[in-house]
Image 1 (cartoon, rainbow, N blue to C red):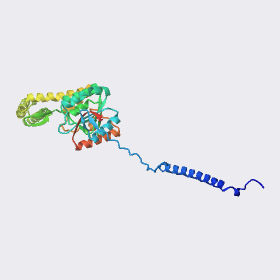
Image 2: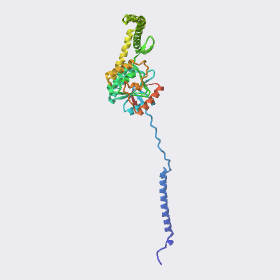
Image 3: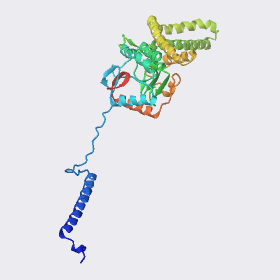
Image 4: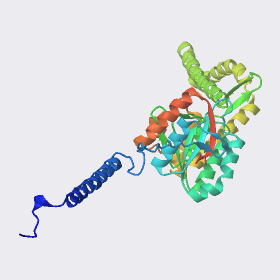
Length: 352
């Protein structure tokens, strides 16, 4: 009889051991599968499952901007962001000269801001000057233009809306001018306060009044002489003294109303504006062209509020085209200033 035991005749203990081994192996496989499933679903095989959460990012706070003339006053976002866009697009440091409101004018306080920034101007080089100003004192405008030219090496005037009167004078000192589609400059006839009339008026009023009287006097002399010749049939040399006497008697009351001392004072004031304009422009063009343009801007426009648009301005300043990004930023500044007052002077800076 053989000692080999058939498979179906193994002891019960051996069969049970085999069964237990298979069960343990299956259990280990199930545990591993369960662990992988939990890991994939964000749970943990070592403890209770946890929900996957995405970290919420806090939105960055919008940048705030100030002008160096008032470093504690935050600029409206429409102005600060638009000015920053202009600075980025033109690749030039931006300075602001925005004076929209009853207190806005070119005076010594504005000049002080630019003088205090001379070291910064010299370090940064040519700048872009955003101008929105009704004007002010001619000597202040001239000094600011000279400061920008001598310390920064020049400046580009950016005019979204207007630069009138003395602000036009300042613009004449620029190397180039970027004007909005509806922007305007203005004549340089000096505005003075008339104590008798208690109002401001142009120094050109008296100059043009005398010029008009001179023109009318000559016309009247010609017409009188012709009339006397037709009626008397005498020679002109005989009739001329009589014609002069008639015209003189007619014009004398009008001429007597002119204060010659006051007239001379007004004339000198106009000459100051013309000389400043000449000095600023002759660095960019010839003396002859500068003289013609200066005389035109000071004396050849009918009134102080006359609009000098972008096309006409090309005859005496270097108007250049600008990238679309700059034009869009200028439009945003223009639209804001048409509805709100703002005074902002100095270097544009991001608030820290």
